[in-house]
Amino acid sequence: MGEVNVFYREAGNTAAPTVLLLHGFAASSYMWRDVIKALASEYHVVAPDLPGFGFTESPASGQYEYTFANLTKTIDHFTEQLTLDRYALGVHDYGAPVGWRLAQAHPSKITAIISQNGNAYEEGLSTGWEPIRTYWNDPSKANRDALSDFPTPASIKWQYVEGVSDTSAVAPDAYTLEGGHITQPGMADIQLDLLLDYATNVAKYPEFQAYFREHQPPLLAVWGKHDPFFLPSGAEAWKRDIPEADIRFYDTGHFALETHGGVIIPVIREFLNKHHNCIKG
Image 1 (tube, rainbow, N blue to C red):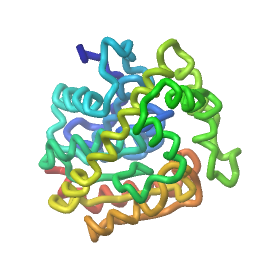
Image 2: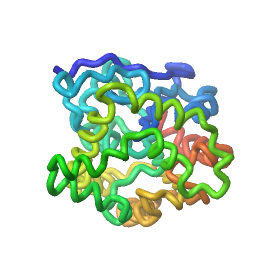
Image 3: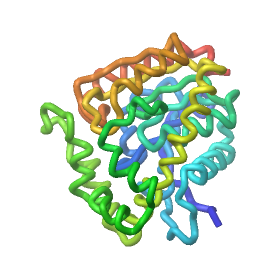
Image 4: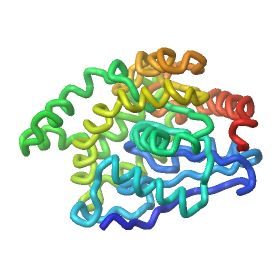
């Protein structure tokens, strides 16, 4: 149990420094499309779809354990198969706790971190998490049913446009693709299983923060400051553990790259180039 065929996007020279990109909820490796294109001339870029997302296999719940520990196990095995021994890590949303678990398990492999609204601190969790916390504390059918509108096309579109001042700047491609994916048989239950297990990530926040303090990875946070789930204070909190962390905010929502990729991607490239010697390793 647990074997799964992983779809991934890959670009650039495999001999170049590697950047591993991990997407979040209501997304897939497609969210990194412009980042991949921009980095491929200098870096080896790899972006997998997590199990239950995109084009990676989505086995039924009884055939694959939809927990963040197991997602991490799958991606860890994926990196081993591709012989990714050292890499910079780019994360978003659900990709963040997968990335933090990888970093905690293999600190010598992580050369730098880029977080686009990928949280690691309690103060980063907005009040929008309260119904989800209720579900964590009592995973009854009633509390699960209360979240039934979470894995729906309408909710996914809302996550893309919420906090965006000009919603016409959000191309419909990504939320339409993900909205169609969520309506496939069994997908809503898979997402509610992962939402329940997200509590394990919050419980591990102190461990993740200990990793940041001990290893001081170069870190860039590029944050949509109107994110309805992950508040700017979650990004600012990194300064406690990594004083040299580069924290930047943008006037947009959860999917900052969808509206502000033109200004964020050059910042990512500059960050990686600055730490090129560390990354090359």
